[in-house]
Image (cartoon, rainbow, N blue to C red; front, side, top):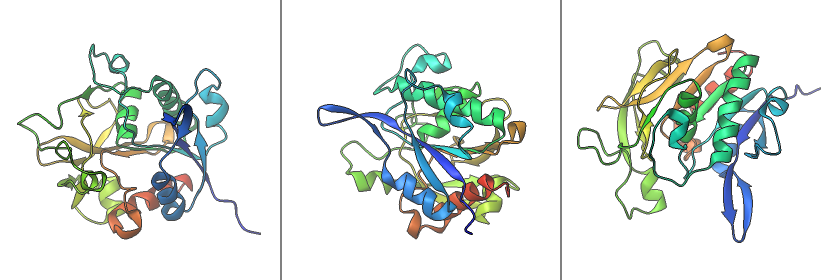
Length: 246
């Protein structure tokens, strides 16, 4: 008999498809996880008025908080202003799931918006100047860049010696895509830096609260993961974590 694969919950965004509201996840996130982490997957709707996160968390072996065109509402991390679009339903479900999964000791992985959500859920803050601050690298392609060109906007990152990412990828430095206008302001207590950009911006972190492996990156490893060994290694780490091997 084939052993059932772990089940990964992948959060959805509230999007508009034509004239109708939809729960949407870009397929590249799901496909990269299912192929390279070797897991089954379920989409978790961001509908906090219809579902409590506690009803879902106990049925999942891990969660993936994906990237999104939307930003966290600034009030979630104590700021007064911020630029949308916002998705308050996703904010509520994502932040609730982080706490629920950690309480259960189960893996929490994040990409881009998910990286920011986990930091905020654990008490950290965000900054909103990663594409315009002259003291920082340009962390987003210039205005007017096409969709593929956004993901071709690259910069190096340095992986922390002995960290989970350095061990999983087997290297100290790599080149990543950079598609974000926001980033880490204050890192939440208990999170360990895993990767930094040359300008000092935190690009990856990890933790193990209550035995739950928490790993998140600011870049997009799901983009073309089939042809990028470093990206595939990120998802293999997710698969090992969901099997209790990392």
